[in-house]
Length: 73
Image (cartoon, rainbow, N blue to C red; front, side):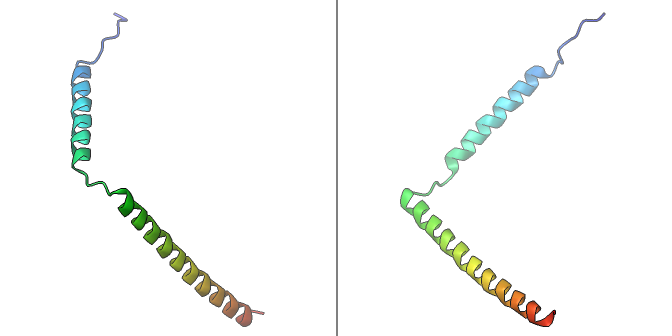
């Protein structure tokens, strides 16, 4: 009467999880991983782009700040 039964679909859930992870591994094998040199090149490009955008945002922010300081007493 007070006995707990395992759901009947527990085995099916394990099978679905196993199938999912097999699919994940299969897809990871298809990924084109960049070489070490490519990775370094892409990383440098990203850092340079971030630096340029940061400097531009700083210039615009400083200009707007200066303009608002002159406009507002």
